[in-house]
Image (cartoon, rainbow, N blue to C red; front, side, top):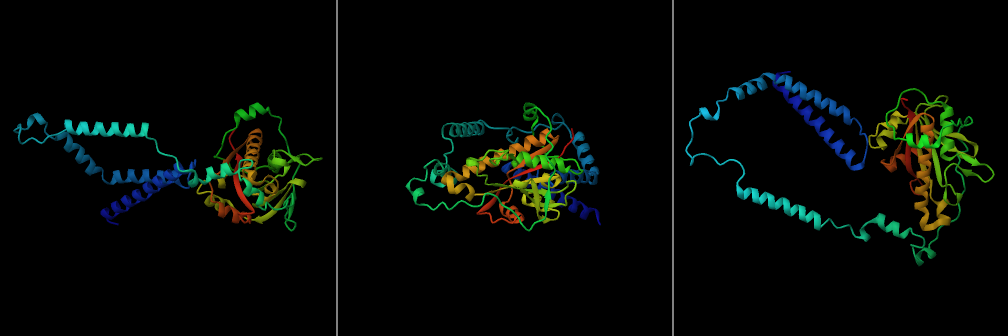
Amino acid sequence: MQRRHLEYVVIAGMMLTGGYVLLSGLLAHLFGFPQFLLHHWAGYACAALVIFHLFLNWRRIRSYLLALRRRPTRAATPPASPASQPRSGLSRRGFLIGALAGLSGFLLGRFFPASRPPAEGDLGLQYHRWSMPGGSGLAGLRLDWGLRPPAVKAYPQAPRISLPAPRLPRADVWDVIAARRSRREYLSGPLPLEDLSALLYAAQGITEPRWGFRAAPSAGALYPIETYVAVHDVAGLEPGLYHYAVADHALELVRMGDLRASLVVAGIGQEMLGLAQVCFLLTALFQRTRWRYRERTYRYILLEAGHIGQNIYLAATGLGLGACAVGAFLDDPINDLLGVDGEEEAVLYLVTVGRVAA
């Protein structure tokens, strides 16, 4: 390849990698992603191409720098007449215009802040008002809120794996709360099945068999949240998607296979979804709560998902593991992966758990 063609290839590579770094960084900033697919590798590639480009053009750069050093000083050149000298710097008029523009922008931002969108155009605000107790008004009395569905979900034809009794470490709750952090970098190696058992028990395990009360609170003890686990590397388990059978503290194999790539793509490039040993996927069966709490349903269900997510965080921390909650993902691919319709049952929340350095 000729040198000129090589330089064009390098320049094109810099533009592509630099553009990807810019785009992925912008998306990560807008959506609050801590990481983005291949973002840092693209940055390394762009830096390497820049260094290579400087190497290819070193002689030209060196000649330019030497020419700058040899350029005659202004005193050595004959002075030009005032009429022929170009005006340089900022004129008073330009300075005044710039100062007035800056002052005007400050005053506009200070005393005329951006107006909020009207309530009728903000669906979130509309729902917040509508979901207040009695917020639906008389129309809520005429709505059909449906009947109470089954209290549990089961996969009767799925292979079932009994979990060992949960190993509950003795840890001070205040120490665990203080140590809790979102951990996104995980070590390789299988997660013990006993640890997964403890995590599931902390998430939604039955803590009071007589009444069926679970580890996380639920409005009316209706428990609309279903827990799935995407197993990537757990001792004694084949990689695949499992459903947590709460009543029996067991796992039901929904589908077998490596789901890491699918989760990373559905998670908009967040690599930790594929690096963790397991990924918890929390779905909601809305009718379990809707039949009783009506317009308040969605609020209660989101609160419960948050309770379960925090339980997983604290249990993982107590076990010496790392966890990270994920709210930014594409709903439809995750729902398809789980085999749910996205209407009666839909994914709400993901939590990764993996081995971390002490």
